[in-house]
Length: 285
Image (tube, rainbow, N blue to C red):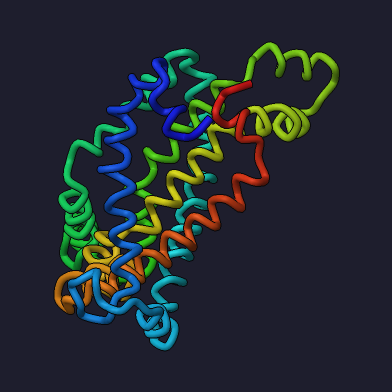
């Protein structure tokens, strides 16, 4: 049976609006970006002669540095949040039980405030003579060096911004571990480390993996943290894409950078997913 016949079956017709939405809202813009990446530099017509010149220009320039910074900061953000969020999720689940998910939702409240507003709030705290340093100077006569516009503050800002995206899936994963299974393991003489290694971590892994992937994909595209907190000390790949599409008016180069970013991130995500049972992560069994 052909694909069209499958789509227009009576039971599948109800899915047509969703299919049209996905094609128009996701596939069409994505295909347009991919097509633009092959047209000549600073050209706004898809009917020009296609080539790989934009990709050659990327590899002949220093754009690889921005790729390394973006991927490195995203990986560091995921690693730090994994260390922070798992103990918090475990504590929430064991203390609040079935209300853990509701309590975790409170951590999403900052998402209702503009990210730039929250980041500028950190600037006011850490800037010289600001809230923190100004208070230390007034009370103790000691004013440490400001960490504004440094790599460390950029990373801290990313950890702060993406914490809810890691914490919520991790909490769901930890809540999937039956307490009866843990109690049975302890009754059989298992140590705390054995219970963590053999029960807690494997059973919570679906939620943790979803948190890893969600946080990593979002963090790779971070740009506000580098601009506001880092003062352009770090140039992420998204900054190069923005410049290509706006100030440089070089849409083909921006499209090529975007396609490469999608390929790199997509490949890394697929490598991670190949190591896990997708049916278990998606809750199919």
